[in-house]
Length: 466
Image 1 (cartoon, rainbow, N blue to C red):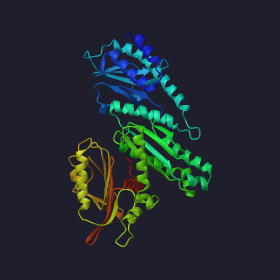
Image 2 (cartoon, helix red, strand yellow; image 1 turned 30 degrees about the vertical axis):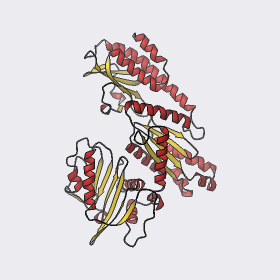
Image 3 (cartoon, rainbow, N blue to C red; image 1 turned 180 degrees about the horizontal axis):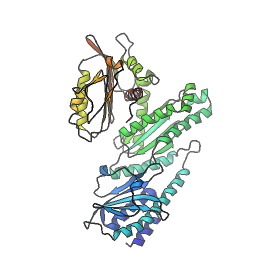
Image 4 (tube, rainbow, N blue to C red; image 1 turned 90 degrees about the vertical axis):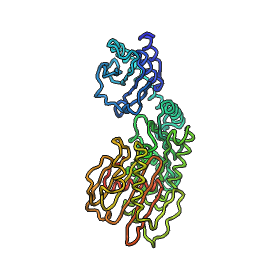
């Protein structure tokens, strides 16, 4: 195929996903390259990885490329050929990286051909992107501005195809305004629309260019997060729920009648192999959040230490209410439980050091002989979980696998110990108070309750979210 034929072949492709794959394929064929990757400019951030092929290690490819680092002309770096896709008007649209040439090296005369084809490819991608934007404008709900369910379902179907082909993960989130009927009855229909718009406005502010938000029903909304594992989806859910409640209009409405906002996460392929299965999983997890002890005890307004004291109680406290979610218990606990759990969690970390998670361990002292410290002394340099140790006193100044946090003036840490763990599909909390002859504790595997404790701990001590 001649260069002119290649250029004409891509100009007529208007579907952006297909075009991106076609452009990379044509570049690989033009340069006899066995491997390649394509990054495309977005609306908010830099150039995002959109396609790759061949023998490249996906994990080694950067998700984002800074446009300021891209040269104006094609260039060779080590064994790779890099081609900026620039429109005739000088706008940088994308970057192609080609590698593993069949001949062993890329010839210098390829640079001019690549730049010529790159101009056509840049124009085609820009046109297809604009075409997709115009299509989306006609597929938005008129009341809320969110995409329609039909468009969202079609988009999710395409994402499933890509995820299967490239071995990717993506997450589906569902949000529900459970109290819309009460809002309509007590405040009026205008407040229902206000609640919907608040949720969509806040979510739209925190999503990426590639994320899609849709209105499914009057009270339910979906969000699709490409290239996002379960833990990433869970962090987004926490951030979205927190951001909505922090919004001024939401606080004003909540003061009159609670919105009842809840959400659930499901991730492809671990939670389902098609859209319907993922949606069922999302709704099941929303039901679990509704049945959580966190909601039964109405713990949301309480600061961290007030919640800790309420959950711990004492031997004269009333029995915890039965909840439909994961079990929670309080009472006397073994003196060695706190240490044994640290050891076991450390072992689990080392079994899967690249699995993301959050662990907070708090107590009177941050010492180098804590079980979690000893367990993670041999953690690899690319250790993925975030581990924080909180205490009033310390002989541990730094550690490659964890972050010590010193809180010298906080007397509450002199009387309490806690362990809060959130991982990919699991959560656990242990709160305890040591006394004369016995240790009194509360422990739970209720994910919503653990998430709430983690969020409040981060707020209380200004700790950075994941």
